[in-house]
Structure formats: structure tokens, C-alpha cells
Image (cartoon, rainbow, N blue to C red):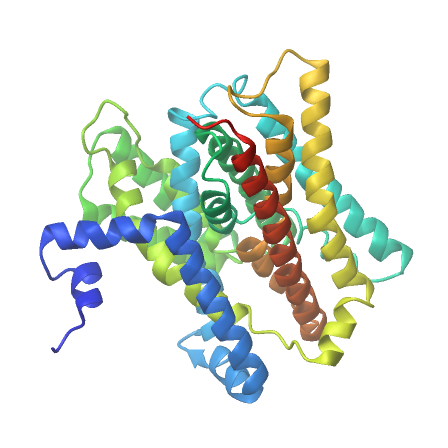
Length: 398
């Protein structure tokens, strides 16, 4: 057969029903998380068994950028575009439409960003180490965290997924702002204005209900390219484009829903796994692991993700519910929140990206930071997953 079944299903040939079936499978959180995990394992094996080959491939120039830069600035833009679409949906018809209904997870997310950053600064400051990575432990990986909750917490109420989703979206929004503000050096204002103009034109077309797919795609790519040339991280363009698309719950095929359904499989099966493949390959020999547990920067990241997220989210939730009239959604218990708070320590995608940005001039520290992110994410997934499973089993049968 000249073309694989997967290629036919995903990339255009084949029966419409087949394509829908495969795309729905790829949208499944557990499948997306599994593909990402597999790519991470391949990256780690490759980087440790053939480190020279891994470095050669990831630093290979393709046009203006290296393979790694194409993954971080290009492929991750798809991930951030999907995040922007999800954020727009939550703002227009989801849990963020009425902030009063989502007050607890929104403020809990802020606590879960602030405390890890403070822990990182405290640990590295006390050791007189590099404090520039304070934003690394701020973000929660939506795909991995939801995948673990879906697998381990099948007996928990659906409202708990919405709680975690809101947490992760607010986390990602905070990370996006940090990337745009903190990790932008000199700005080429002409290119930045051109990018914002492309997004503005797209928004005007959406307001006028002009939805030609090719036109929207051209404007989105133009916004990305101009943002890349401006010096601001190109993934910001993905978020802006996602927020500019129209979402009308009463419309049968609104652009937001259409593009979300088209892009989610690409993000889950291609963009994020390939980014993991070229970013997660860090040395894990005895010396590298010893450095993770004996030097300030990785220790700070470990403590911030595993403990900072748990305490920051839980403590903020307690304060909000005790000091205001805000309540958890029906069916959510305190121990459920503790499990979700621990799962929020799964940093991965955005944490790896910020590690590269924060320690761009120090590859050794960047590798140690990314190794700490991977270890902390694994620990948080195991502890949080076990807690979610225990809470699910403790529920009375329906």
C-alpha cells in the first residue's frame, strides 16, 4: 500500500467516517497523553544512547531556524492556538463566562502560580544560584494532567475535570503573559505591529462573518511569521489568533468549533509530541541525576512543582471558600481538590519551553532544569493519580 492507513485517515484520503473516527481518537486526552509520553521516552533514550546524534539533529539548520527552534516557535504555536481556542470557549460559554462561578479555581490557579515561583526564588536565592527560572514551575500541562485524571479518576464527578481544566487554562494564560513580557528582548516594532494588524484583520472578518478557511489560514500564518520576526515569542500569535475567532454557541458550524476540531488532533498527535521529541532529550546518567538532586536550580523546580503547586492551590482554595461565599461545584470534595492540586504539578510542555527560554545561554542548567521538570511531573502524576484513584474508589456506586 503506497500510503499508510493512518496517513489516509488523518491527512485527507479515506472515507469521511474513518477520518472522524481517527480524529476523535486523537482528541481523547488519554491517547494524546500517551503519544506525548511515548515521544518523551524516545527522546530520553535517544539523547542518552546517542547524544551526539540527538544534538546534531535538534540543532540542524532548516532555513532560518534549527529543528529545535522550529518545534518551539512553530509546532508549539499550534498547541498555543488550541489553548487560545479553549480559552475563548471558556470565556464565552464555559466556566470562565461568569468569573463568580469559577472564582475558586481561578484564584487557586493564581496561588498555584505564585507559591511555586516564590519557592524557586527562595531556594535559588538562598544558594546564590540563577533566579531567572522562576517561571518554570508556574504552568500546568493541560494534556498530561487531564489524561492522568481521566485514567485514574474515572469514578470522580465531571465537575472535577472542569475544575482542573480551569486551573490549567489560567495557568497557561499566566505563562503566556510571562513569555510575552519577561522573555522578550529587543522588539522589532514594525513586525510586531504587522502581526497585530493581521490578527485585527482576522477579528474584523470574523465580526463580519467572513469565514473563508484559506483566508483565515493565510492571516494566521502571517500573524505567526510577523510575530516571529518581531522578537516576541511566536507562540503568542497562536493565542491571539485563537482568541480572535468567533464563537457563537447558537451557530451550527462556528469557526472556533470548526478549527478546534481540525487542530486538536494535529496538536495532540504531531505538534506536542515532536516538541517533546526534540526538547525532552536530557542526560540522565548518574552524574546528571546527582546534579538534579544536589544543585539549587533543579532542586528549586522539584520543590516548586511537587510541593508548591499542592500547597498553593489547596491553601488558596481553603482561604477563598472560608473568606467568601464562593463554593466548589456540586460533587467536589476537599480530598478531590488535593488530588487535582497534586496533578497540577505536572509541568511538562510549557515548563520545558520556559526552561529553554530562561537558560538560553546555559545549556547545562537548561538540561538540569528540564530533567527536574520531567522528574517532578512524574512524581506529581503518580501521587496525584493515586489520590484520584483512591477518591474514585471511595465514592458510593451510582
